[in-house]
Picture 1 (tube, rainbow, N blue to C red):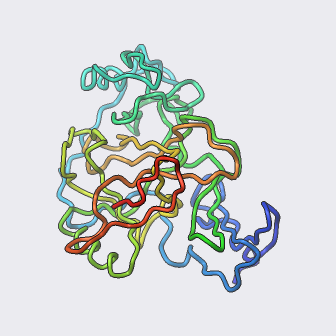
Picture 2 (picture 1 turned 45 degrees about the horizontal axis):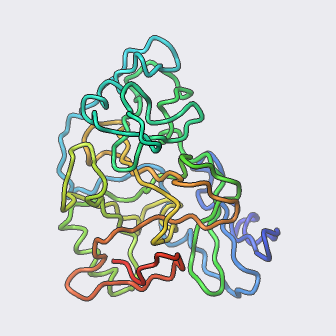
Length: 305
């Protein structure tokens, strides 16, 4: 056991099990703590391989040529007036609005503080490796990785959860949902197994997200973080989540290669649990599969699937 495990510090009465479950793979460390009353706690970082990029399962069929567009901005930081990604988004989604109801035409999805202002349900086109701009460009956010200090924690009454160790402002990129990208047939096999085990880390790209291909109804693929994933696999469901989801095109315009970005939908206080909505897609196959919900939100439905 390495020296950074099982040290003590106080964020309430907790014990630090690991200073960084990503072991240096993230730009900022992600600690793991438990209530001091918990004896012989499990080590959740040992149950999966921590990765920072999505992994494509062989079952997934996609074009070998990665369709992508570069912008022609002359400087290291793009301008929405000249950036081709703004023009492309405007052509594809001319009806898009920001979170305040204003048109998104000729605007980046992020403000000058790199917080997303685009209304939920629309994809984000970030600048990419073909562009001449630098990592400091306002249209490069998700690809620069986690910048908010997060913590995986557990209490005696609940399982593993995620909270911020600092105040998170609305629109801030929190993390990406990362795992193995599977087609539906392969995912159904996993749902049966995970249903028997009583847990699932499958994220369905459901119909309330307009991906690059404008999929409506049954999604073509899922992201499974069971064996390979990141901190997002510990984010719990809430009927009143404080995260929103956007598909983000970086390396390719192919929907299968889009990233699943999780952003703060409201200001999140330091120490407050970070949650997302799992949607209504069943998580198991061929059996009753609703899970009881314990989110305690005022609008809690009592279950989720």
